[in-house]
Length: 466
Ligand code: ADP
Ligand code: MG
Image 1 (cartoon, protein in one colour):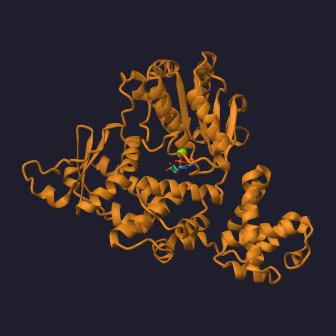
Image 2 (cartoon, protein in one colour):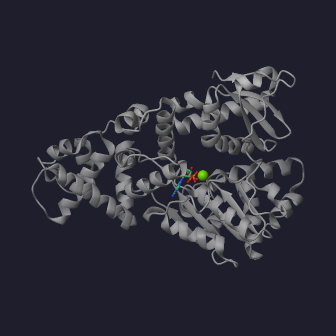
Image 3 (tube, protein in one colour):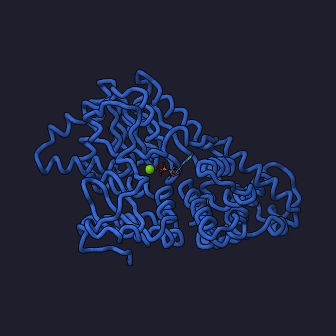
């Protein structure tokens, strides 16, 4: 790692945290964006909860401020509770201030922490991890795959009394679980400041519990949690297999439920599928409302891209959003990252956003998405799965029992290979590209409408990718 770190002014621990944050963000935004925006950052020092950094140009400062500062801050305060705010200055300005050796404070400064409506800070808020200001209901795009989870989250956020306990949200990585949890917390904190809302990762919960054990402070630990009105624990799969933490979680959980307090939990799997989780905890988790977030559909991806472009105040040609919606299918996080890279590039070089520039900027990501699956493999796997003959992939038979699997195979060919529609059509018995297009549309529709069908297709996709 070759970040410009002035190690003599920086606590090695803070420096270490920065390196791990860089790695994390590099994974999220890709190498090119990382090199353009994160790598040039110089760490200056930590002062009274404000972390000072500098970048070479004003443009970079503005870009990092709008696109990465909040992410950096939230990752950082997750690792180091001392850090409340970021201050980014321009390197050349900073050098003009030899008296402090520190960067000039920015006119545009990140608030130490998003403050919602004026309210008396609740003592318990300290226990909570900071909330990402972008993760509100207003910024959440609703579509078929997440409408149930969204409705459940809204209901919990708006309800004065507890109906479902716990609310258990689950789904794959980057599909909006954390976003929905923060949205609930924002909503409650804004609407009813008297209620104490604690949001934290299961990892943090575990860490605090272990620390309490070590400091023989477990009574205080329990008391703290038990006076919370709404407790949200994110990524609860992290405490599977950790018996003592589970035990403690279970007791806290029961005590809160018995007192009519609201619990919201997220995980990457359903309660029943969580491995290494005690049965009684599973069944307790299953008792409330369980809502899953499905893989994104093309429509949802398109909606998200449009919403994000609007938030950034940027016009993106329809063709480009369609291209991204088709190509970046893994999850919303990756989709957002791709969009940010495309926009950053266009602004940096001062050119319009086009399909060509998008392909160029995202070539590594697109290649990774272009898994080396062949259409033949797809046809074979899909035929096996639906128990039809491979020859039916090419045949003219129109019976639903073969036509549907054929459409699934066409759809997957479009998703998983870089073949064009006419090329795919040719491989399916010389069909026209409009037939392939129709198949893709149809399958997307069905995925959105029928959860079991969606799971089937998702399973096939995973098998082919793995
Ligand atoms: P998870 O916790 O499920 O891994 P996150 O909640 O962190 O995923 O979401 C990843 C990113 O995608 C976040 O930046 C989030 O704002 C964004 N995101 C996910 N779903 C949506 C959605 N439906 N609308 C807008 N943004 C979304
Ligand atoms: Mg999450």
